[in-house]
Amino acid sequence: MTKPVLVRTAEALDDALRAALPAGAQLFCLADMHTQSLWLPALGAFVKEEDCLLTAPGEGSKSVETSNRLWLELAGRHADRHAVLINLGGGVITDLGGWVASTYKRGIPFIHIPTSLLGMADAAIGGKTALNAGPVKNLIGTLAEARAILIHPPFLRTLPNKEIRSGCAEMLTHGLIWEAAHWEAVTQAMERGAPGTDEVYRSACIKWEIASADPQETGVRKLLNFGHTVGHALEAHFLDTDCAVTHGDAISAGMVVETVLSEHRLQLDPAASENVVARLLHFFPVRECLSVPIDRILGFMAHDKKINAGTQHFSLLQSPGHGVYGVPCTTDEIMRAWHEAIRRISA
Ligand SMILES: NC(=O)c1ccc[n+]([C@@H]2O[C@H](COP(=O)([O-])OP(=O)(O)OC[C@H]3O[C@@H](n4cnc5c(N)ncnc54)[C@H](O)[C@@H]3O)[C@@H](O)[C@H]2O)c1
Image 1 (cartoon, rainbow, N blue to C red):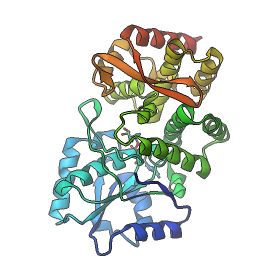
Image 2 (cartoon, helix red, strand yellow; image 1 turned 90 degrees about the vertical axis):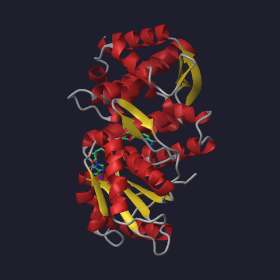
Image 3 (tube, protein in one colour; image 1 turned 120 degrees about the horizontal axis):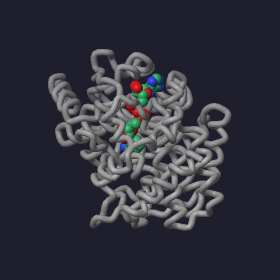
Image 4 (spheres, rainbow, N blue to C red; image 1 turned 180 degrees about the vertical axis):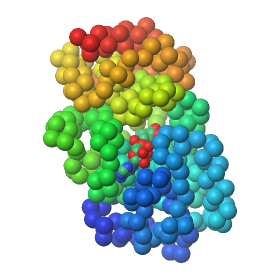
């Protein structure tokens, strides 16, 4: 599995990109309007403005309609089977661009250059590509390896605070399921402001370690779903409303409910559980995210890919730093944890 490479300086980015590109290949870049105007010039030595495919920022671009337009744009520009697509943007761009590249002419090479914290620490790594179908998140996708993944933290200079917070949620997930010291390091960095390069790259490497141990997600990779079963359902709910909730905010609220569920199902120590919930509540708008009717969330969860023979399987916490996957939970148990989480955060 492609390991993310840390490139600290503009010169190192140029060198890494030059090394990753096959000689003589046609080059295209996919960006959204923000990443195009802010950071396409950083790739000026490689990509001409007219070779940039553009899409609107936001989750709405992970659609069959956008994908169809991009396939046709590539065809209209005579992109051949050896053309390379550089995906310059957040998780939306790497999910969408990975999908478009992995399906265009049965697959062309692509390079991820994530520009958001969430993209650098998580979404660009592991080879999952995705589109949403209607309100159902990530219903369509492929497993496809990027030719290179270049992590260049200076891109984060222009990232809005709420997007920094969103990326932090995935970083905290990595710490909670895999490495208690990382959970501590990221919470401390959030207290100071934002995570630094070392924490960002450590998260990227944790994601890579877990995903490369289980590329097809038949085992340990399921750990990464901690917080995501409830979180994706919340995200799907908010996609349908005028209320803009980031991926990370939804996941952090999902982690609160699934931490309480961990207490009920895995005997997570109540003091540790309380500490995790309190810290998530301190950093994220958990109350707002959980002010949704539970029936609606259960309805979205019914679409979840983690349902097996009618039982919902969760990845939960045995202790901070130690996740367990494949824990079967009934609807009653989920509802009990949901109501208990709301009671605790309202107290
Ligand atoms: N494939 C995976 O394994 C995986 C894992 C986690 C999340 N995801 C997906 O990632 C997506 C969320 O990613 P995201 O949070 O990066 O969202 P995003 O791509 O929508 O980016 C968030 C916003 O930040 C802007 N932005 C990005 N980089 C910027 C920069 N450097 N400066 C200023 N603005 C910048 C974007 O234009 C956008 O408006 C979701 O669709 C989620 O499903 C995928």
